[in-house]
Length: 189
Image (tube, rainbow, N blue to C red; front, side, top):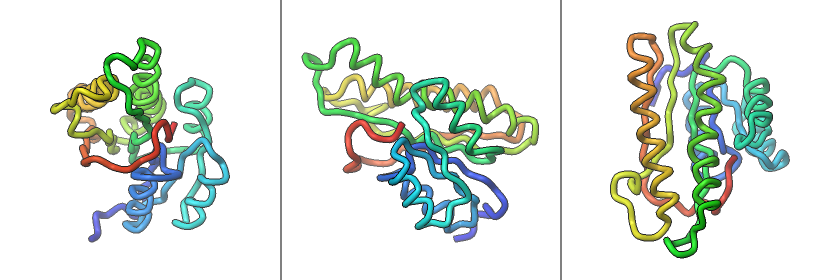
């Protein structure tokens, strides 16, 4: 498949393992100059080397400092895939208010940080793609993981709101909602 990504630079957050790694591999195979992101430097560099990535960006996206470091390392980005996120297997009685806040910070605010740092450049250039990785639990939540379900719904809402903000700029915002995965809990940011 050729989706004309040659010459486009893509940052995939949380791409040192799991779904993010698979996305980074696909984008690289399609000709994009991929920036692999992670918090674990050895694992991130290993993936980058295997796929021939253009760059590596190390940082914790739950902090402004980490997001700044990732944005600087990534450089001028054409495609932002907000994949970094985490979940655990807690129910209503076990998920504390602090768990809810942490989940929202990791799964939603980390993406907002990257949007705020990278989309202005896309807008100036008149071209860009912002993709939120969501999930079916956003619209069909289960009893378990209420905090995670809610964070996915927020990601979906974020993508729609951003799309409306970017109307007629040449920058698009979409959400992709894959099915269940076997990702490691609390990984990616």
